[in-house]
Image (cartoon, rainbow over all chains, first blue to last red; front, side, top):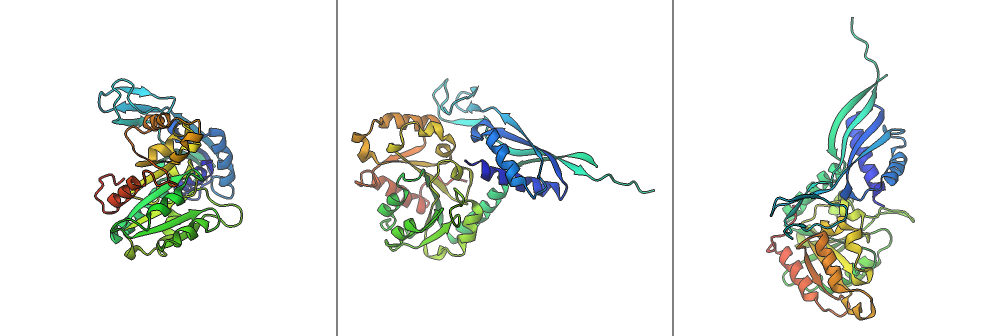
Length: 118
Length: 228
């Protein structure tokens, strides 16, 4: 259910960088831990994008796997379920190495051809 | 026309985080500690506040009440003679399912910051969206009622991981439920190892002292858990 709010955040971020140019593609990096449902995000994105520079843009979502690192024993592992204790030493000093991203990586914008000065 | 790729590399929620930082600066200037208080609907947030807000030794409390609709919660708390400010997130039958930094920003002018030490922001009842949006708080607290079952930490890890304190409420109902408290506590620990937990009942008052002490500690900034 948070995909609607997240879609607005994407459109606002993109609009800032598009500077009025029409956006064809938005490349998004989404960590597994953000609990985003790709189809739902796509649906709301198209809805929120209406009447903005993102209208009709394709939303490309790259899903980033969730990796944790234990600062106690330096073990690194990938998680599929939300279990955040180190499976090796049982420690709790565990940091997220990847998987909590929600970032606009790049956009592809339509640019009018420049006419080279003679 | 031709197509150009523009490198962005920006967290999509940066705009919210920037406003949250501005809120935080205003709260810091006024010397007010802010707690973002979250849970699913009906977990007991308002009752847990009713139990303590008028009774924190040496701490002047204010409440910012976020609701999709109505002022029922605000009215309950105002009757305890603490200043309550209401934000409704939507008009009619719509509305946002969470508070974001901008909504809190728009309410700052209405808050009696000079007259309080602790501001508790009661967020909209929801275990998903509020976890995503910082509002300029010092700490995040959530309520998980035992009636919700033992699996909620596993289903809503974002929320359980976002919080510095988890209140496990409604333990007076355990005799009537097929819910194993130890299993719930184990699941919370799996999702957020070593997170502080207080097991309590807003109804009977069991464990409420721990909640009151926690708030007093953080309001006087004696607790070193202030989230940055």
